[in-house]
Length: 199
Image (cartoon, rainbow, N blue to C red; front, top):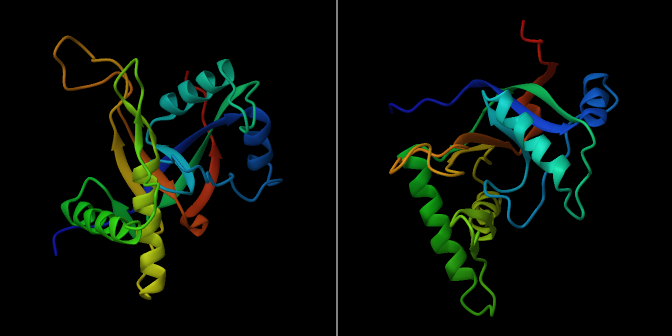
């Protein structure tokens, strides 16, 4: 009764300049959806919410250490997007977290006889959960369940990611904390834009 959708928000995506320029020129209809088994918010197009600098940092990091199977980034670039969150699985709200918890129970039930169960993987150097196979599987199970039951699908998924070293000794804040939004329904992307140069 008292919750309201995230509504319109600005998202920022780090990519190679060639991809960004093609998108802005209208040569690409949309950014490519991520379909990795470890995508922490499930499959879709990922954006940093209201944080173009974090998107640029990510693109620069990817340029320095290219990964197999990923499009290489030769020149880091950021595109902005106007996003209508639509029907959002907002993982900073109690109701959405309860729905996700139920989806985990569903996943456990469907995997009872399976030998392999997805797991999140911790970086041994930092202790951070960077490969979120379990979280991805739970979210994708939720989406699949909604389709089977004839429920409204989620257009977007939104969550807080705690990342990086402590901001200062004994801090609960991290250097790379951010909010990301994963867009499943690209109709929620109302437009892309070029960032203004700071004066």
